[in-house]
Length: 188
Image (cartoon, rainbow, N blue to C red; front, side, top):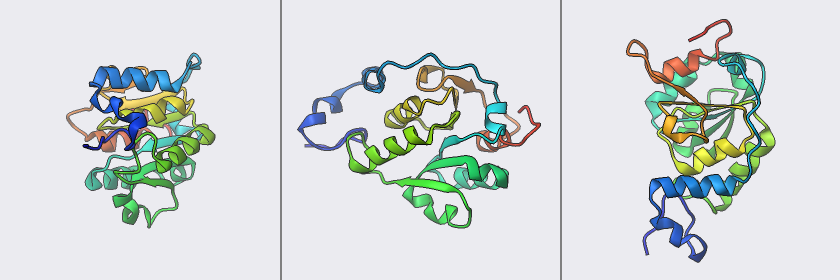
């Protein structure tokens, strides 16, 4: 029996391993339950205010390093980072709140994933930032977070999980662009 990158091992999720991407998305949307209408928000002010934000860090160390170096120090206090365990050394020099996951532990139905789900829900962010690459189980976490503003890059296909789709500029990397949205007074 092969294992799934989205679901825990076991009979309970066995059939879900064979779902194609659109059906996977539909399953996660149904699992998220009836969602309330999104409250009005102002972008990028929702990232620049001193409100709570959940930030799904890319697993690529170079991209994560760029994001962390560009984020203002005061923003780190209000962000809950969801990051792969390989990035622990990168975060060790910051005073950021970080929840780590492993490849095995980030599958729906795993104990670690349940803890991430609880943490994201109780953190009650006003915004979620997910630069990608997109994994259905993390899109699900963004949706259930209750955040009005859920931002990603070229993510129109990921609606309703993410509801603000940014297009990267040729003059600046997406990582640097996303980090700069957290600087007060900047519009992009």
